[in-house]
Image (cartoon, rainbow, N blue to C red; front, side, top):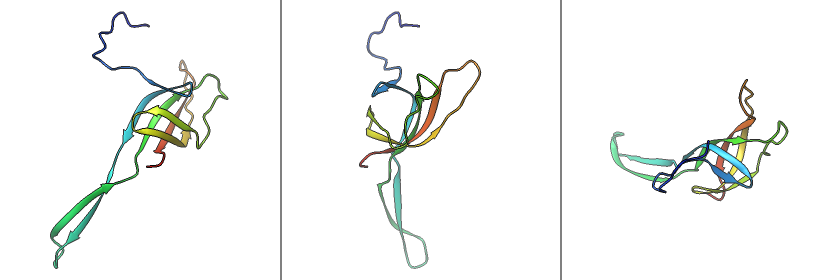
Amino acid sequence: MAETYNDGAVPFGSFVSGGRIIEHLSLTFPTKIIERPNEIGGPNGWVAVAGFAHGTATVQIATVNDVPALGEVLTDLPGGDWVIVDITRPFAIADYYKCNVTLRRKNA
């Protein structure tokens, strides 16, 4: 169903990367915590450094065989380019073909 009106103030929808429709994109930008204890193991300082960004998404596929490859890079997504590192292929009655993918940020 197409939108009737959009004033441009409410972002919505999916992303398109290389002709693929990307839905349910969930990106995580974690940190690693380094803790320094005092002489009896109590808190004595800490620092947070960037961890490896990762995420999940659903990729629509046109046919049962149009599956993205492991290592395929998805571009034009928030946070940069993302590499597919894991693929799950759910099949459900009354549903379209899709893949659930796990992503790692390229050159993180």
